[in-house]
Image (tube, rainbow, N blue to C red):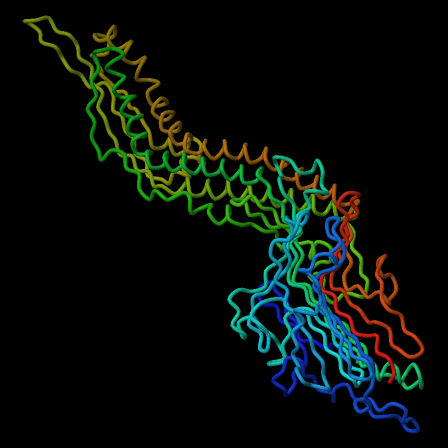
Length: 591
């Protein structure tokens, strides 16, 4: 079967284009593409010339049963159907809204409707259907079109989608669209039972724009059936396109983790902003304590002191990760800030090819292998997200440049014997702190940088040592551990910054299985009730149950129908078997 359509994906949207015609009418088609010369010895049917065929076609975007409601009872989603008999009497539906695109013509009869479904009646209030806002020539601005064309020469075309004959390929912008087609949405909460919890509050199938086309040259088909003249490969042509199919989960447990990240970002920023003050306070506090402990020591300091520069803004380091994060092949996408987990079912079920160009009546189920696949993917992705958030925060926390240039003399006052011998002040130690490193290096180096940069040297008092022995004993008891105390104070301030990140990592690690289990519960509940058929052609093998079509007779072709997507949910209270994007051409009867 040759391909009749040109497709163009605009963003995530697929739009159907039909063959170019010279007429400015959306309805016109070139008969030459479908006319075939009569074989030698056969003049019973001259396809492209003979008229008088009774012809039928239809296009409908959505039909079937949706959450227990027969959509045939919902007027807002009715399709379009057009038919003529041999006397050129036209019958069509819906009677009021099937726009005539070939008024006054006796060679081509075309009807079309637009579909712009608003709020549906109960119990379908949680459902939205695909729509398109596009100004298509010869069409009211507006919507997803449903199209039906018949001719007395036995040509029938049914289509649904954005249809145009102006350029051969339709683009949204070409016809002044204000917005691209948006997806439809089907909320699944009612069939998921206990899988819907406070951790995961909503699950919905998001359905991209769906198009379908069925085209039949009834004359060619009937000539083969009646006179065994082989029909052209293009005599029956059916095609479809599905822009996408996602399962979107609303997961407060995921957005709750973002709240934890936000809190940690605020805490980390405050600690970085106050780092210089914290280091200065810690070092000064240790040195001042020497005097308080003995009362005979004094400390005089010199040097440039403590300086912290290159303090970053923390929030931008993780803002992109909090907005969106996908796995390598785009099957699972997290939108943590919004608390959304989006699973691309088209890719999950059929790889990079998605749901297009599949054989007729292809079925997909949520098999154990699929469930294992999605479980592994979600766990790995949330874990990778956690890892990257922690890595980003660790990196940004390590950026500040810390410079400490402090030298101090520690002196002891030896009491004299007034008024004969005054008090004597003797230097007993030199303290030096000389550090110049990024905060990250100070953290990851352990104590090596601190050991090299912090020193306390006890002054050798020589012959005075025996004389001052009683005084020096308590002094040395304080000075000997002073170097370790200073190093520990600096290390504690540095580690306190990174403790914010470590604490957050523990929270996120605990959240990973909670998120994964919530997703697994949804898929586990869907698995026994979910069925998906693509490229449904009822007259072909392996068609899904309840796929009616009109069979061929001795004087008429069959109805050639194609449905792009059929979604089934075998729920006792809210059964769903919804067809999205259905086009049919035929039956077509002999004159």
